Amino acid sequence: MFIVFEGIDGAGKSTQARLLYEWFRENGYEVVLTKEPTDTAFGRLIRRLVLMGGKEGIIDGAKISPDSEALLFAADRAEHVHRLIEPSLREGKTVISDRYFYSSLAYQWARGLDLQWLIDLNRFAPRADLVVLLDLPVEESVKRLRGRKVKSEFDRIVELQRKVRNNYIKLMERFPEIRIVNALQDERRVHEEVVSLVERVMKAGSSGDGVST
Ligand SMILES: Nc1ncnc2c1ncn2[C@@H]1O[C@H](COP(=O)(O)OP(=O)(O)OP(=O)(O)O)[C@@H](O)[C@H]1O
Ligand SMILES: [Mg+2]
Image (cartoon, rainbow, N blue to C red; front, top):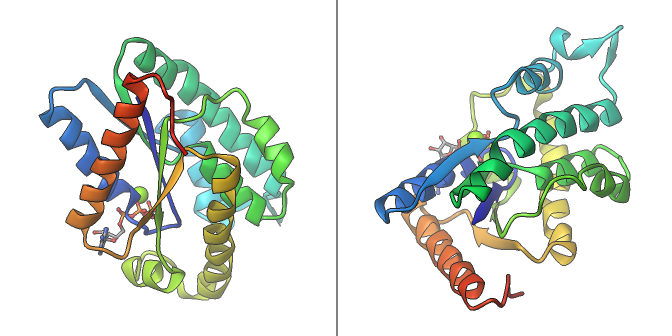
């Protein structure tokens, strides 16, 4: 089974991915916990050029263009899929990823790129069995991340996050594996909802129905 956590910055993805990883282990499953951007050289390049902002995020005096961003993320993802995700799934392991191509669609679409181009670019990446969309208002995520981001970038970040939140919700029509969870609830409650979604998808899979919508 392949499970992905998605949502805006600070929605609780890493927290919930870790809790679900522990749940699978306690239940005797072989499970791999992974994330995007990865810890490979590609992932490090993305962190330096795209996520850090400031001087490092600039090539020849200009901010990196959204399409090169999308291509960098896709290159990192191709390695992730071929070296870790697909081999692990073939060995019968469960894979949990903290972000995946759905992030590229939501974020790079918000940066002005064409959604269909982004979907085509990521066509090599197998769809997940379940995508948990941790949804919460941007104001709340900003509170949770207080201190992590520089103040001068705040307004720009909030504006982008708003678009990203809406984009995730729009993507649910195209990708029915995306299931929304109210991330305003406390960690335990969110985890319980995630487990019940996982159990439902597992049951549907074993009876051969695939992901029900
Ligand atoms: N349900 C929750 N209620 C309140 N605070 C939470 C909840 N879940 C996580 N947090 C806190 O919010 C912060 C962000 O959580 P976390 O790092 O899991 O989010 P994230 O989605 O992985 O963020 P990022 O996109 O930046 O990686 C952390 O300080 C975490 O302890
Ligand atoms: Mg995280």
